[in-house]
Length: 328
Image 1 (cartoon, one colour):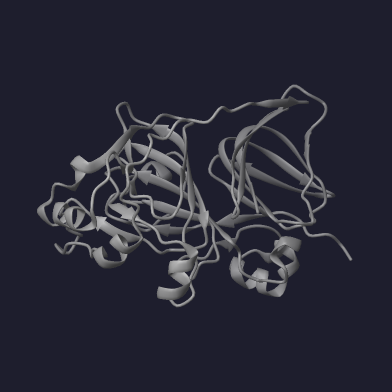
Image 2 (cartoon, one colour; image 1 turned 180 degrees about the horizontal axis):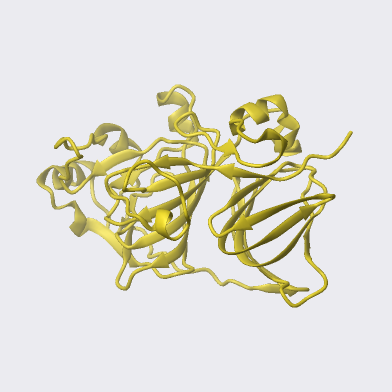
């Protein structure tokens, strides 16, 4: 039996009110609206499913492909057909709402068995003085925090942290957080769309309505203890034959590496092995090139996302590029 080959994905597009135009202008993402806030690059979540954009599955939704071939997820999936991660690009033209995500335990009990949401942000770009909200700078009671939300002065309790290009932030469930205006982010998260919005700056949508808040559930899961300011971890690039890589994050839900490839002036290509234990996702942040797998070749460009089924034959890259390598 032939081994599976990698294939490109076409994302689902989201036009939330805080989005901008960089995903269209810089990454050539298609969207019907002028504003493009997020693209769900690799997703089987029912709120936005990615579509195969190359290979034998072209035009087929990713969830249907995995139902037909659960082995593509790998041995770690134990026969499941549910993709455990959701990979996004996010353009925050304006501040995102102050929000919090539930744990698996809370979501399973209170949200009809859905997943909780652990996520990681990799900052691809940030305007000068951009900041994110990450937890609270001192402990506060739930009643006091609710009053601050209702009175519109919750921002004074948030721990605001500078965000710079190449920064990394890990957001466990219960962390009160918000991406600030001017951030361009790659987000890797559990496959979940559970967000409890705590505060939205009294903004209105295009119809003049304020967006819904979820105070009861949000306060039930929010960690309102003082949190230490997040520090950027020590990161070490490992070099080998035209490539450099570093581990960004490893948790129970996903592993993320950043990989740099430059083989433009080399005869040898960069080679990568895909384990039978897990699928992989390559999210290309910069550059372009060609990916070879056995006798097949696909070209990729900045912003492209490639799904590599578990057990894919070794892949080789001839490129000058930077990408996130995601597995479970």
